[in-house]
Image 1 (tube, rainbow, N blue to C red):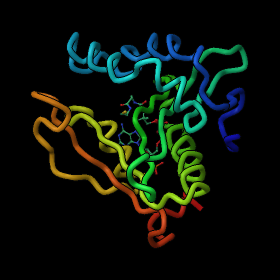
Image 2: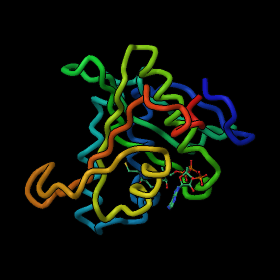
Image 3: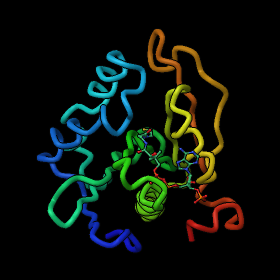
Length: 174
Ligand SMILES: CC(C)(COP(=O)(O)OP(=O)(O)OC[C@H]1O[C@@H](n2cnc3c(N)ncnc32)[C@H](O)[C@@H]1OP(=O)(O)O)[C@@H](O)C(=O)NCCC(=O)NCCS
């Protein structure tokens, strides 16, 4: 399903049983970003419904032994027929910098394209400098910080990428 993953890792689509397993890794993988409030915010951003109704547009990467190694929760926009959206992505810190995040996005972009989607959007917290650097490196365009974007005190940076743009700008996508 996802070629070129590091040896010992295998990918599949999400399943409902993955929900609690993914919740269990969030705080460690996000490094406790934004403390207790961040922990609550992350858990509330991933209710079970994503693993029930958006399973076939998301991915889970596991080690040979079944341990969770990475995930991507995304979906095809219901309201914008040319848009797909990455809601949440995480990679085990032990695997950072090995291209796993990029491979998850490449797989999601291929899926989005196969459904006629041209744009991919996502948002991240301004404090999440790793996420901002990662998305910029992948070729996303970042907005300015949008105050209260997701509610009072929940500022966000919005990212967008045009999948039909000049291939020279995103050679890793082809
Ligand atoms: C952001 C995250 C998904 C990146 O995953 P990853 O597998 O380490 O990323 P990759 O190895 O595929 O990196 C892809 C590119 O982004 C760059 N990049 C990744 N993390 C970076 C960081 N912290 N700072 C600067 N650049 C970074 C890499 O250098 C690489 O660029 P290059 O190879 O072209 O030089 C991972 O750090 C993570 O899970 N963080 C915690 C959860 C999170 O913040 N998720 C995003 C918000 S929902």
